Image (tube, one colour):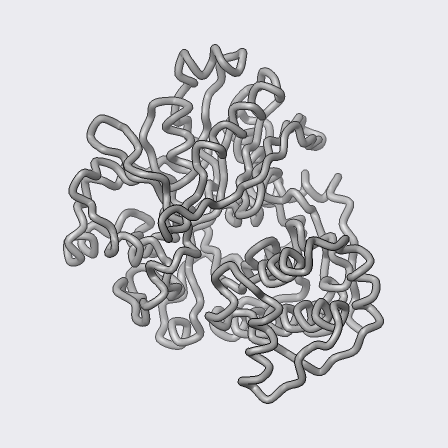
Length: 447
């Protein structure tokens, strides 16, 4: 059977066609399009209509399929009025409107969510919600435009700071305490449930009728489904613009030590918990490349292999969060911390990647300590799995084998959940077995 996985990342979107049989899965990219934020009157927005246009173009190119699933980043949302019309373009999480947030408003013992200033709950407390009739996370907003059905899905809802990590439902009591109208949060549809069929005008535009199926709509949730692990004793790093580093658990960890370590308990597929820490990820390198005039990355990585530097930055320092002149910020960080700033582009690349590897090591070690989960291997999936230097440095930092790949883990997990809804595959171990058959992974042993 054929399925379509729409996977939206912070820098690009892609529409992937997946042919799934009992013996394997074949994934093909049919359309990729940029995801460029737009600053209007001082506010940074997502260009959500351009994203929707990209989705429609991809669906048309992909051709007829059994069903469609959508995943994206978390936290951000669109607001609809009572007539179902969008109230303004969704604001980007890197916008400065929450930069001054210093404390959490969601109790950790309820939400289990890592404190980040741009968590949905903090954004909402800066909104004028008088006209809002419905809040839809980004995948749900696009799904509404495709089908006319309003729904939410737990893996993305769990990034809001308004989701009960233990009961796995909206934390309506917390909403009431914060003065948020619980009626704007739609009913939850779990991965594998049908959301609705394409609207007639959508079916006419793309050339066929299909069902939209709920998947792990947070891209990390879908990526973790496609981790090609043979046992449960693994840590994962879903590495792209952000890096999500953690372990898969059966229940949340809501201790004070966990809160102080800034770990998050986000919902996974099949009732699992993605116990993880958000690390800034390849964003810092991406912004440096932009500031340097977008040079070819491969020669820089080759040069960085032979570069040496003792300089280490904290990727999660708040100064690295907004867009801007990242090389200057690295130099300023080095000045503040009494370190020598990188004096060449290869040194800067080496500094960024070894700093990320050390951040991964800290996160894996903390996840083991706080959860009690044994970890024998690290699975690094997503776009960062193509970065050989990062994989090698991560193996050396963690002292564990690093299995790199698959690159398109989120799209694979998205498609596999759809395939299971049609009876082609079973539980998580079986889905991961299907991925292992064709993942084409590379293993980096620690030295």
